[in-house]
Length: 374
Ligand code: UD1
Figure (cartoon, rainbow, N blue to C red):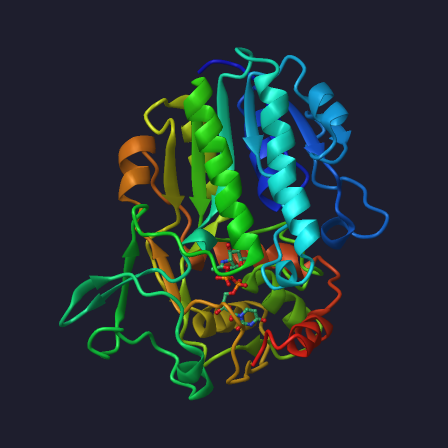
């Protein structure tokens, strides 16, 4: 393995900080560029999770000067910096477009100004760009439905129905070729980040890989950020003795992937050229319902707190999306190693030692006031 000079944007964040740890452990020289966004890192943000073996620059990825400095002597870039709240992106649109789209644009221009210095670019993409996952219909075969119609949801019929024959659909693995249908501003910006990087990478022959992360969970996911993923949100509710609020009926499913498997995919993408210029799913291929995750968390914490099944829905929410990881296996040699049964106890050991502010009620009220929860 070649030792490299690596830049991780967003390297103080949830995924980025775990990635930095692994890169430092592998002997790479690592630099972090992170703005320490208060919503994620708290008001007087200190970079708690940045490996002492990495150099830290506190700056915004939209600042060209800071990005230029951060790129000095770098030969590989992992672009993890992003604003990540799906619901919030639907009203703080400028903030999301600025950080995610403009930030990526600034990074790419700064990279181009240095070519041929940068030999690899790996960008964090997201399953959110698919919208609904792939399904099978017993009469019509594989189908790629868009969102469930509002009438159906107001009727509280939660499962996907075939738009051709009306039968209830069964979720199946979502391959990378599934047409993209991002349903939030966040998801559109993730699609932009992925495609800006791939397009620029292809045109200028900078080997670039987009990794489409599924629902990532693990230690360091900001518990007090009510706009983050469901594992962190439920953990914050439970830690404060509150019942998690489950939208719909709790039978919607996701592909929960442990952060160490996301790190694994990133390291593999750095080492091989087989995935260059490709977008690749990173998940587990296993479906777990939101209700089951909630139970695993409550049981693991030894709490007899039953979730509140609210029977309402979030605008733009999908019903099921599970990864097809054939391509990751083939091109990266990726194999998920941590099952939920192993990953949740590890998460909870960390959760127990945290103080989390539960801001879920106010965040939900914010969405309700905008008719984004119905
Ligand atoms: C979205 C994004 C994904 C992003 C993730 C975390 C989409 C399609 N995907 O995923 O890229 O990584 O957010 O930012 O936009 N839920 C509850 N109660 C809660 C919170 C959530 O029941 O308090 C339910 C949701 O309704 C949903 C499921 O849990 O059905 C998962 O929600 P979430 O963790 O926000 O992730 P996604 O919406 O799948």
